[in-house]
Length: 280
Image (tube, rainbow, N blue to C red; front, side, top):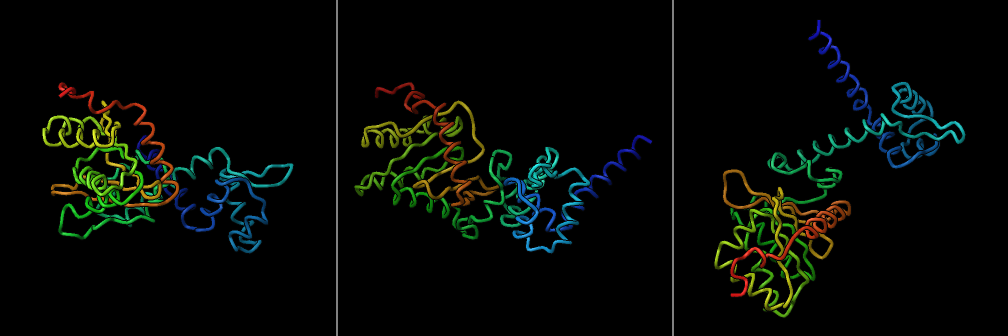
């Protein structure tokens, strides 16, 4: 009996989800009300639905306590339950959308870390996704840094190409404003490799400021924000050399990247403090 009860509950839950997803209008009403309360006429204008259709949709959603009508002004709004259901459905929709857009990357993207609607990434691009050159995508990021005016980076996936791109921009007389935060794993590489250590120290001496910072924790991927306009996400490839990179210019993704990079930067210390021979 215990398992039968669980089975009935599962079937009921699946039917509930099916009820919402079978009709595009039902989910659109939840989407619209997630942005704020609306009157019946406002909803009808945005849905382009007949009065009869809209009445049936609103009645169905009210019966399931997903929406409610405020008595004084007779506008509709999401209930607390409706807000929770919409939030989870929107995230599921985002995961499906990103999975369809990047079928070979979705399992490696840290979607739980991304505090933005995953559907935003559908506007992005898998940079050189079909290139046989494993570093082709990384060169795109390096060139963007070289040609840009600013770059804010949080680095959890190591590649030296962006650093060389920055060095080249300095040689060319174009000195973009760059701040780079390495996670604990990349910090070990930047401090432990003598050639890389010499390289980033030389760059900091040329620009006469601290460029490279270090964290005591790891991050799941690399975020490069170029000119406050484009975000590059870099993740390691599975069992292959090279990287997969997604570029995206959606405002919500940019806002999230700015916030996350700033938060980690506030917790970081200069990379030079991680070395035992800073004076040399």
